[in-house]
Length: 293
View (cartoon, rainbow, N blue to C red):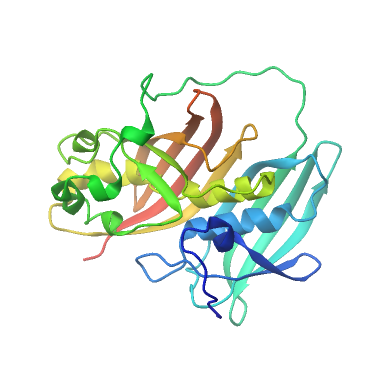
């Protein structure tokens, strides 16, 4: 795969696609993870971007259900094929399948875009403490190195960085301590640089961001149990629901819980609010979490 030079802070570049014809798109840049495969968030974001192409104006992304089928190779282009599932009065739904190389299928997804409707509304309150400012919280680089070393057994969690994502952990001495893990984890997150005023890009950017540390609620709970053993971690499936329009380059508070992990699979559920306490999105992820030895 050709790797043109781009600013690693530029999330738009990581989401960009090349048109190959009707319903066909190709990735332009690879974004690797510590397993030597493509970062799952990039595949999520590019899928969301591809699905929105050609959707009628005024219908914004509302849902994506996504299967990671095989690890994508970041040095090779990913080809996305988009087909229409529904074009109704209120909803546009698309099926997206992506392949690499000689036709190896790496993902399968369904995305829905919807018109906003006049309807009853309710939402959960934010779990962020009143007055908490993400700007005042430490970056990963400022967290106690002992805490960072403590979580390296969780699939290399603490060693990975995404320059295009700004990320803050409240009370890291509590949340990253193996003696305090509870199956709950919260953090603040946003795109590092301002994004264009395009709802499609913000939906795709959120999809990219949504893969970042969501499953820590499944994994961190077991730090006290795994001693010196290490886990191999990989995303299996992912779903997001976008409840209202918002900007992915503004701070979002994520509260993630894990109701269960069993048979090598952990489930995490995330709820997303903005600084004003409005619920923006919900998301789930099931991840593979198995001992490496």
